[in-house]
Image (cartoon, rainbow, N blue to C red; front, side, top):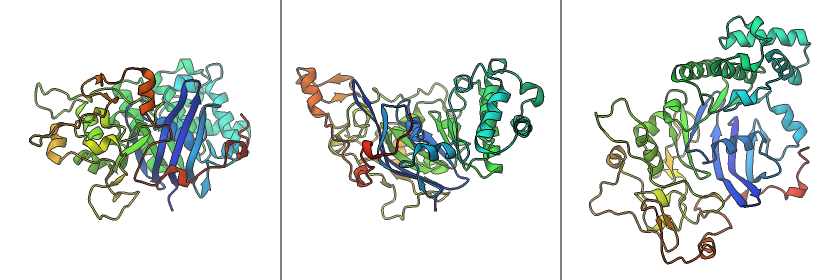
Length: 406
């Protein structure tokens, strides 16, 4: 049985400007001790997915509106806040993007670490302080007993991130979620922080979800990768398989958007054309279609299910034999993936239906005369998919759920 099983997770934000379709039926599993990378552009739903797992969505706007989050045999999506609070920190810990805003600037490191330890363990302040010193030493902070009494602003960015890692591992959680832990750090410090995370999670057999937009970071850190776009997982594979055989146009675009050390001199990067979709509107077809050079007519009307790249293969969700799956009607060939562009003679991307924005051309069809007509083209009931619907795993109505105490 998997340590974490996310099934058809749907997250919505109800705002004055409309409903934000942040996560649209995400499904994945994670075994004990496994390291999973979650990659994609900003706004694709990576962080929201994991905030939903630990029930830290911003209130009152954010809601889990479908699906299940099974952790260690319990559905976290329906647990009352009092029980979730006991799981956070103890069994599931999270390292946030910016340690300066995650650490309280008016409290010493000692006060914050002791409070974290005592919140979940019945120990004295002196015992908690001894444990805090051990943790700071474990993450490589020199003179830990002295630095324990310093404030966050007295640490460098890399040292603050080490403190956050120490606090996250203080109670030896079963699952650690690292949300872009190397943001705003220079390259040398990034490498040190990532190596520290890898070693500590390996030594303690802690499962890791590493959220990042940098494919280079997950290359050496994870065993599997989920690629997210517009609230969907569009490709999932073992790390080695995904880098060797990228099979979704979006993954191919991400790989060709970053410089490579083995690239020929003067070789140009190939950017992903256009912009991410407006998440206030649920797409009626593949969400990547407006930006995709491989799109065909079906892409505009049907959102493909996540299926194996090798037909008839038995699906394995975790481990080093996990099945390589993609959500695409017309995947690139290996030669096209290497080139970063379609290579088939005579092939051209299918033109958009009237009213759709063609991000490849950067224009909108002139037959649409008004914003009202444009809005009417988008369907509000949710994305169309040939896969299992998130509605198959409904949660109780909001008024019937447990009071979150917020």
